[in-house]
Image (cartoon, rainbow, N blue to C red):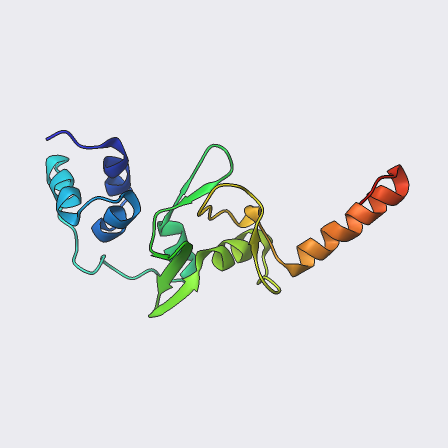
Length: 148
């Protein structure tokens, strides 16, 4: 059986079959067949030992890219990546933001890049960051002119 490269990559990264099927729009049967064709070890039902922390659960579902983006491989709630840990569902951007900035976000998070589903903490801005950017834009305009 010829295995699609994207399925093989996610399987080798330990992503759950259901998540691969959902993300790549293939059947679970296709993912399972690829798993067997690659001679990967049998899966542990339930995903094995639970992650110790929310941050560990987040890291287990991400794949860093060379371009600074972080691809989310875990479950989605519509278009929102979510981290499942200890019976709770937490938006992945909130976890990513906390890991990157060392604090919880204030107010609503907005993605600052164009990659759908990007889970890089550096690519999100909260209310405090947006307000600081507005102040910096006004200062820049005052110094250099312009319609900021």
